Amino acid sequence: MGRGVAMRPSEGGFTLLELLVVIVIMGLMLTLLPSLSAGLERARLRAAADEVAVALEESQQAALTTGHQVDVTFDPIHLSFGRPRRPPTGLPPVVRQLSVLAPPGSATCRDLVRFFPDGSAFSCTVRLISAHAMEMILIDGVTGRVRRGD
Image 1 (cartoon, rainbow, N blue to C red):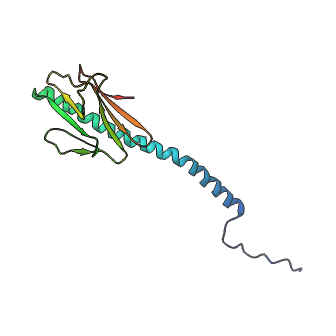
Image 2 (cartoon, one colour):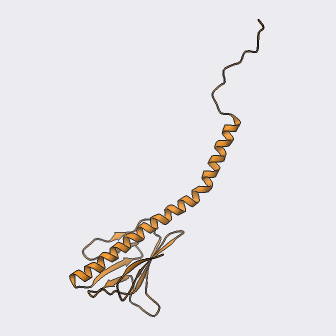
Image 3 (cartoon, one colour):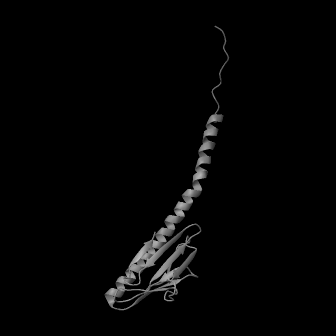
């Protein structure tokens, strides 16, 4: 019997091809990461806008139910909003700027949205801004309707 070349069992490790495949997959994941993080930022901003919209809707209902005006105040410095008999609600860190805008020619919405017992309100736009996105909440002055500005 002839002696053949003895083959050693392969040592632990990866082949060059396996390493290249892993590097390509990691590269693809890194290219997708910025779009995923931007999407997450938008989702967080949208959730903050939803929270503000719900608070505004509840305040309108309170004005209708109690027969008294209800004010929702906004603090653009501390990025929070407040309602009667409740502590201020802070907005999440994704919100970098908060503003309450009145329609042109009107001075009614200076960091305040007021709902009246007849269902009407100050006509305002609440704007939440993050690093890469903006969400708006519109309040109709005649009906007091609160809706998201999409």
